[in-house]
Image 1 (cartoon, rainbow, N blue to C red):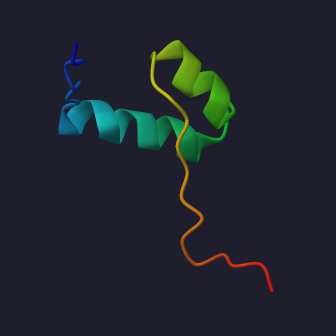
Image 2: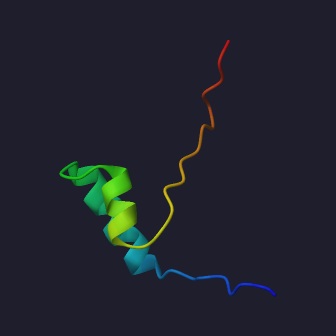
Length: 48
């Protein structure tokens, strides 16, 4: 059984980014409120 992939509009994504950049709420809280997973990239960060 396969799951349907969810697609988010550009407006939805930009609204989330603006909310994160305001800094009023933590990323985890915003993700939970919107029913999405918190995913962050470690690109550019490498432990020595």
